[in-house]
Length: 150
Image (tube, rainbow, N blue to C red; front, side):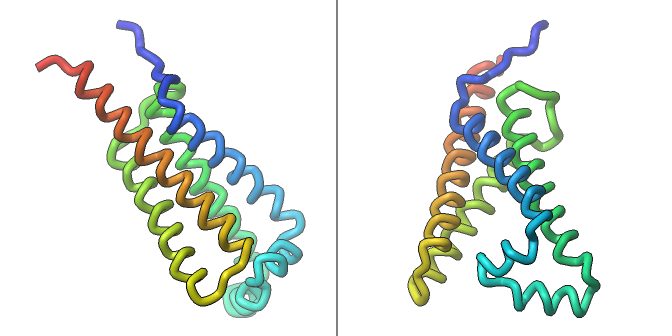
């Protein structure tokens, strides 16, 4: 039986592409990490981490974050049938949606007291990605139940 590719799930496909861009962006940021930390206003925090845990710690954190974005992209691509099937795919898609939506809600709570356009953009991006995974996950779940024989 031939595997059906569900590229009609545009929400998950767009979410995957955004996460791939975020993955690559974080890797590129490794070259200019100190400048990026200053831009985001977390240079002091990262310097304290570097003093406490070693100079490579901020780089390791950035790599781990980039790999998380890659994992999110791979799960979306797997749910679309574009790559091999990953374990716990339905559950993970919804966990990803919840994480991004919670990140957005946290960002909104920060903006109540201290509004910045940088925070607005990252909060908005998190909400968009979370909703893409939520709606894409719902669509994938509906397609799965529709194609299942009882």
